[in-house]
Image (cartoon, rainbow, N blue to C red; front, side):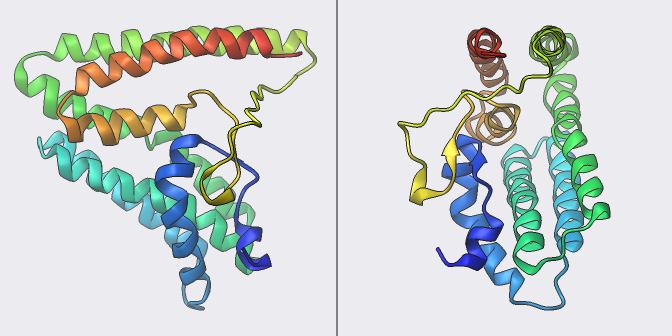
Length: 221
């Protein structure tokens, strides 16, 4: 990779990003960086639009379309920052905009799935139980456990390096066992595509239930 591309690549990223997003996001970022009229914030807002379209597709019962548009949203979400770093257009507004979208880019499509999949099949209680009871419930519990332990360990950061497993094409390194970004990819891309939405949510939640204690144990060491 040349120096321009390296500026856009983060040293650490998530494994689904490495294998399914970065191989497209990096060439796309290089292409966008050569177009002077393209601004990083334009890419960020495009990511938001794709996320809204994905939510509408899920709510309308068009799950393959929802998966596609959510994937495109994730792709652009990983492209805007690269373009900003490659072109030296990093801004406080762009960073805040990106963070704000990150906070809702999983919740809104899930609400679309609750309506388009569970509510329309008369299984609203099942959807609420699986998504908010099981999935988010586990996350909330461990969020507060991690928060308490971080405070006790002088704000130590969770970092689970897997140095022996190099990433695809030398892009970053896999450093998290199963991050929220990996979960979102499974639940909102692979689940709707396969037709096993509930099964995917349960599987992802159980994976987190198993891996979170490992991260918790390593925290502060």
